[in-house]
Image 1 (cartoon, one colour):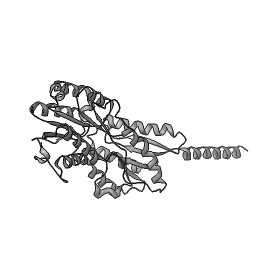
Image 2 (cartoon, rainbow, N blue to C red):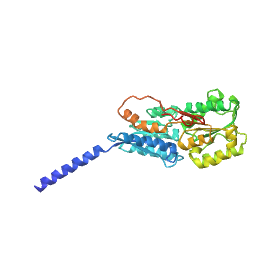
Image 3 (cartoon, one colour):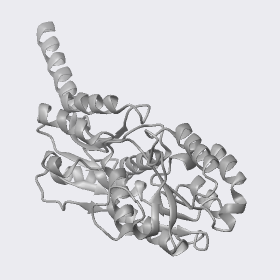
Image 4 (cartoon, rainbow, N blue to C red):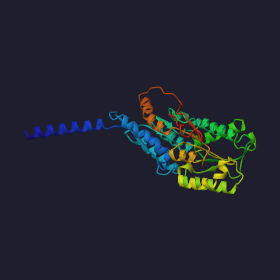
Length: 330
């Protein structure tokens, strides 16, 4: 009798354990360049909102990334570790170093769906992911250039501030900017084309580090009193609002007269505060919350074998000092 009861108890335990295992949610990982970047915090909020909107789903959205945006190798290793996890059903990646991420994906040959978000792999590695969801980065650079040409139709000197050397999305924005200003595709550096010349020492590379970005802004504007335009191809310096305010407050007379024009990427709250204060002239904003919110649904479609568009663009918001109160879109 006791033996029968014991066997029954074991069977119930096994059934209960089995139910717990089968009821565990599968992971949809959203991997960003670095958790220290407030842009990605907003993207992560989109991932969290998806979980809130889908409490009964068999999937859960996991927002993750290396602690520091400068840790390119750390991001690659993190994705490799996720590929090896049995609970991970799909991964959306914003690659900091596109070639390094592609090399790892070639080696690991994951069988789960891989997509890119915010930043893409290089065109020659596009087959390693199913789709891209995010900004049309080349067009972002085009729009920055269009605003600069309106504000400074005669041209002048310019400095571009970029991120990591191998960040494909940032480099695409720079290409869109240079091509539009010069009027010629494939312009690698402005040397008078369209009336614009990049000054010595530029472009600058921040390696996605906020203090570095602000130091570069202070150094370049301090050493080049006749600089006509400073283009933050990404919003790094403005992500450190106190340091950014300190530098741009000293530049207020030049900014107010448009002797110096500042155009920046992204429209996060501290950036919009800077725009409203007259410490930038244009913000061309991405939609990171939408990226984080949509990525899990796209991954589920891929898991199910459904066809998805490639690429999928999330749109841009163009904000000037005159439109700052109403410019933010979806």
